[in-house]
Image 1 (cartoon, one colour):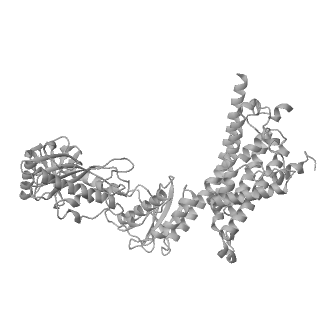
Image 2 (cartoon, rainbow over the protein chains, first blue to last red):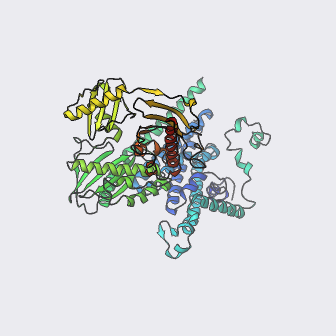
Image 3 (cartoon, chains in turn purple, brown):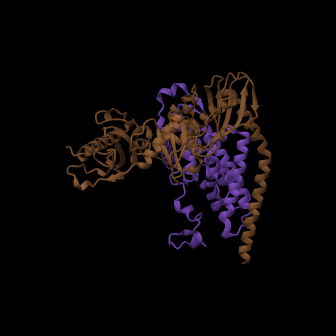
Length: 228
Length: 395
């Protein structure tokens, strides 16, 4: 796959640069909403919607937004979309709204969204940014669902709220609690690391590019500087 | 300059654009959300009062109800459903509570809240079943759930308000005032000249027939409590409130006695063997002693250590009559554990010592959960008796 092809951008977010399992972004909502597959899926889709919309708008406005106020601009756009998504979920999927509670509003501070705005959308075309949002959103949703499936099946002996009776005596409640979430999360990171061995990007490939301190960083290891 | 104006313009533009989008979405979703909530709360009505049948909204605009009450529905079977908003860990807990026609809680539900789902939310679920069947008299006995005290306390207050509401709507009267407020209102009614500021009189003389005396801080007079009656009197003891001649006589005697009490400070250095905890002692003309003494509360060795956290002690004032009986007892200050040992500052605890002698003071009830505080308190009282003996010249 060519590095700049649309397909590459789309699949990038799903495994190679999976926001949760490789970039380690959005840890807080990941741990908080993965006790139940339904909640995890809902959270994933809500984030996906916000991510695509904010990526597109930010990409569209990337030439208009002055560098000095870009962060407030991104935050306003993201917060706006989150509020819209929150209202839509409240109106049309009240059960999900109740389950996600305050975490839905906290999508605003989910670093995946601001991270992608800063790392990708502000430098690429609208189409690619939308694809990036889609890929990252799917990657986020899949990662959340994977963690949630393990946690819910092992910890609560149910799947998406449907009880699995024969697992009932075997359930380990530890996994629905926060520490259990950490353990599952850690194991999945290790697994993805193993699967993408040699292929996943080295940290510095993306840390400096997306770094807000890029313009004034004086470290000799800052690789962006050298390119400029 | 031009650059910053441009930045500002872009930011304002984006804000305006986002505001328009939010406004548009809201205009679409708001009615749906409202309809959903309405549907949900109707289902909730049946859920909390399953035998209710149909419900009618009660007009409560003219009624004096607890502040938390939003809506009241009357069920076809005579029960009520009350919808309330109270504060838990976060403000805005909306609770519906069903009350049967016999005044018991039939069920309740947390309709919406900003509580943490995994903590307050689950606690509310558990608490829900604990309040079923409770009435206004025993709702306070339901224990809150540890780790979610604020949520469950808010929940319990909501249920209590709901039960009070039903009593009021049924034509009954409910006193929404606290005990302190009731006392303050009674005192002000008996002696308006006191301007609402009263101090409880500490008995240093035995005054028969009077339960308590409250003197006005502005020295305009005093209020005597005889049973349920509050009788106001001027500074000379002339009753101002309408009462029987007998009562007026009692009040006159009491106030005269209070006014004429002369106390002399005893020089403690003149005596040997007094407990080191004794702070001061006073003697009245009739031979009563007023002792201020330190008591050790919750401590390591139970009874002689001061509070481990603050190093403070319980300061107790006790008056012992010439006949060896305790006339009055009062906790002046204390630093015991909040919610446990600090009950020693309540009149329900120290009031138990009134009328007790050296032989019988040990009979009082300990504060539950605060045995060490009680022990320290009793030890201080025993030292007060001991001090009086030494001051009288005995040994």
